[in-house]
Image 1 (cartoon, protein in one colour):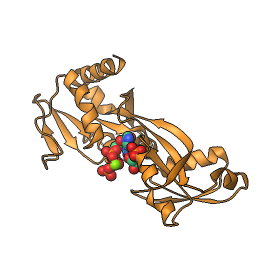
Image 2 (cartoon, protein in one colour):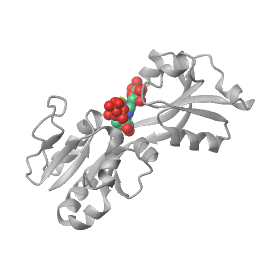
Image 3 (cartoon, helix red, strand yellow):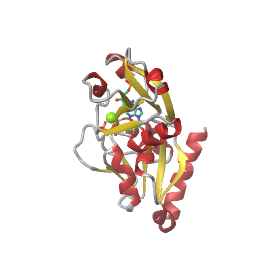
Length: 212
Ligand code: PRT
Ligand code: MG
């Protein structure tokens, strides 16, 4: 049995066409069903539905053989013990620094001000500000970072942006780009050895689909 870990929403939706190319079709939609284990048309392949941030953990421990996770999630998780053969180029966005409209970020940085930065992406943020030589106090949040500068919890946030609509709706502006984000295929290294004959063809099809 091959177990694939996916999160609901954009990752599931954008992985579906790749799975189809490998001849794998889920028998249920996670948005409609409450099931956490979803069978596929292939009796030897099943999909487990987990939180996006939990995908690397399931794969690392071998509870899933492979999974799809955002680079943002993999940076925070460290990705230890995970084989990451392919950038699937899906669920694309970017990680950036944003502040409240009217907050002069560049001047604050130039004057060496200590900034309070709220984020879910503590590792990425720490590395970014260290590289830039900006002094920060990081405040860990688990969601809706956009709120923090509006109510005085933080001067800035580090968050993912795709269309920019969420920033705009909350009167925030992007002041610095950190990196481009897309989702990767992650594979349990032991599983790849033990189940090579079933796993490798799936990985190959994904790779070909991304190149095409
Ligand atoms: O949503 P939930 O709390 O259940 O979990 P999650 O946010 O960890 O998962 P999910 O499914 O929302 O995101 C899974 C992966 O999709 C992330 O790990 C990213 O790699 C990728 N991705 C791509 C995004 C976005 N685009 C994105 N826009 N993840 C989140 N967002 C959020 C962003 O944080 C911000 O709040 O969408 C909002 C901004 O969107 P725009 O379009 O208004 O700019
Ligand atoms: Mg989300």
